[in-house]
Length: 113
Length: 114
Image (cartoon, rainbow over all chains, first blue to last red; front, side):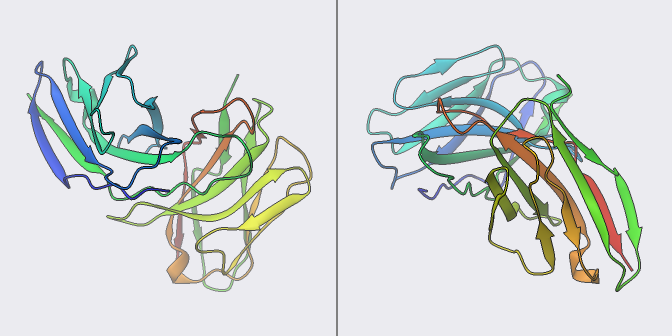
């Protein structure tokens, strides 16, 4: 799996957009970008994934640069409940065989009232 | 669907004791895995399984055993607990086919070994 780099922490004002960056400069052509978050003391929760096009779901938007070497997770209107550690993970999307997923230390997002 | 369930939620063991952490999923997922998470660190893979009867080691397998007799259950056994095994343990599952796909995590078991 490609290695990812994320800032260790970020603050965001409640109601504002939270933009969480991730660098994955060694990503290969068949690797997807996944985002998970972990709210304190809970199991990680899947947020969104993408290959090269921008993606949006009910939780967030994912913007992937044209060269695919970096991406940004956007929480459009952050709430206090979005305070969590956010993990950016890159791995192949094919289904053949088990792929060990590496969770780094992520970005700790603090949403401030 | 209940998703991924884990029991117990909390456990305190003395050094040398053994115990089994339970994990079950009702989504008919082929792949299941166990992670541990220590303070300030990311998740580290302990063991995983790609189907009933098939298991393999992850990054930190020492001191743990697993078995997979059914698709639904994937218990993690601590043979002789050590203080270094104090951690939060998460079980996860996902389907084997139809990717890309997300992993579903259980709520975790917080284990303290004294």
